[in-house]
Image 1 (tube, rainbow, N blue to C red):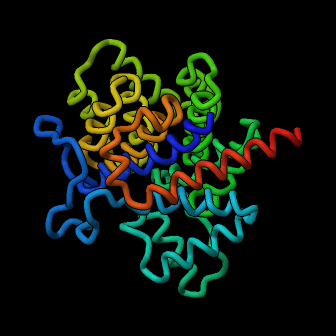
Image 2 (cartoon, rainbow, N blue to C red):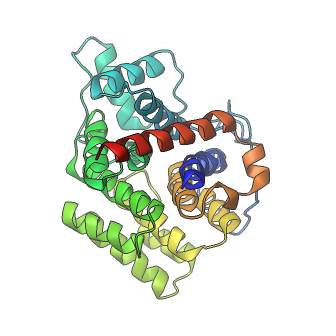
Length: 304
């Protein structure tokens, strides 16, 4: 189980770093290259080096560290997020998160979320799926964290759905994908329907390029999450899943982060390519956080 905790966080950061130079680009499935790359000149991430991650992993580490330190609450999360943003440390942040932080920075009261469906709400939910031995509690905490920046019900549904996927994968529940789809259907019928349609396309053998056109790859949870479900169902070989998701275009850093988190939760850190682990920014810090969240999970389990 410890390997899966570490693998989930490392796989997420790895996917993010692989997708980082392709964020906002067109899909590049015909000329894919394995491994970390530098963004082209003029790209929003041009200041980052190969193996570095984006704001997605930063948010995951932020919530995870607060949880592991026993200091998490929405007020501290909001304050830490404001601080990161105000000093320009967030890397090409999600537009909704930027809007919320800008609003608060002008002295317009406490940090309050916006009614947005952007998928910047998803990465910070991952540590909650790891830390809590009960899925209801983990999902509840994750949704409240989401609400700090995203108040739209579909964003909350997406967070609940992804927490369900990671939780059931981590705990080896039979057919975790089906469990997550059931959660999506309960939370938001439109989101659930889009994920089900994506999985049907994969089952019917639709090629990935066509599926990308039909499902989409933009920043909305209505596209980012369904295409991630398609890819994790299509590609079982870790380097394939990571490489294809990182070249899906559009919101590719988040798409690949979701796929990497699932991969690590499913197979453990030993399934992650060793060369990519070696080149990953803050690898030791992320691995240590996985250990700390595993310890927190076990302490909570003993208290149940």
